[in-house]
Image (cartoon, rainbow, N blue to C red; front, side):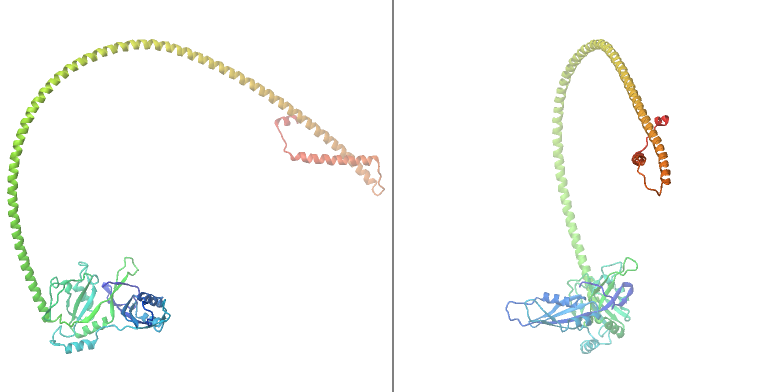
Length: 518
């Protein structure tokens, strides 16, 4: 049985806070879809398509589980599970009485939805069972309604830190003591001998395999009221586990697991069944001990046989090694004799070769000495020749260097002379330019002075003419040669004034020569 993520924890009721265990109501719906009559052969309705239509109708909510519980030619029945019981009424309003249209079918499919009834035993069930059951004595524990059987509990949710993969009876007792005092707890998974056989009511039930993810447990209460409280609390509920978050202030993920709860109908926790289980356990322990003893004897016998076989093989190996060693010794002696004979022959050859080599080296050394003497004489002769060549070459180099120095001195003198001539020419050109500039500036100053004198004379004449005009104002205008001449002179003055303004716009060049001239 697998666990599922839980996103809606609003209806969770605390079962045991330190372990993060809660119980949550199971919310299931029964959905029926009426099918149309098939008039065409070979035409069928896809259950998957119908389920997709139902999921769309349920939006924005969704189903945790939606599976086909019954299928016939007249209708399809689905079993659906949702997160919370509060969603059942909402989904019934969305689904009940609605219709579905499928591709290829003109007739709509009518949908009916209702809350599913949870199959859980009530007080009448266990009262009638124990009242009508034979070989039951309600005065004895385990033969009356005092034991709950729970199946599908996740092992990790009830485990301790020492054994994280196995449930702990101590933790189970702490959790279910919430409803009343517990007399006994039995977890078949924790009994290593239970997988072989178990005696219950005179019958053997074999345990061929165990689930390592979930387990079943029998919880027996001391009082009837504790049994009733537990049955009422677990009715229509599933188990919820909240994980601890590593970050502060944040809740971890929550998971739910469907569990099966029922009252014990097999007298599993009765004194007689417990004694039979203990007796069977003792028998299995003795049988296991006998098997272990038999295995030990067989192992010792096998080890003894193996030891004898090992010794025999060791003796054979030792004999083989001795024979092999003797053979190797004889072979080694023959090899040493051959090596000694070969060594003597090689030494004789080596001695003869060394003598020949010595004679060859002596002759070679004598030849090398003769060659060395000849080379020494050649070197001395060449050294003398080179010394003489070197003296001649040094004299030639000195003479060549003197000639180069002389040519360099003459070249420098020629360059100095050319430079001085160029400087003289530049000076003459600069003096001629300065003289031209002075003449131009003198002419310009003379022209300006002349114009200024003319302007003063014209102004004085204009004043005289203005005085004359004042005298004759109001009289008839006189046109004479004097007035016409005055008008002509006024036009000349305006032209002069315009030229002067244009000239003043240009930047004035004031140099040391101009200042000196002024």
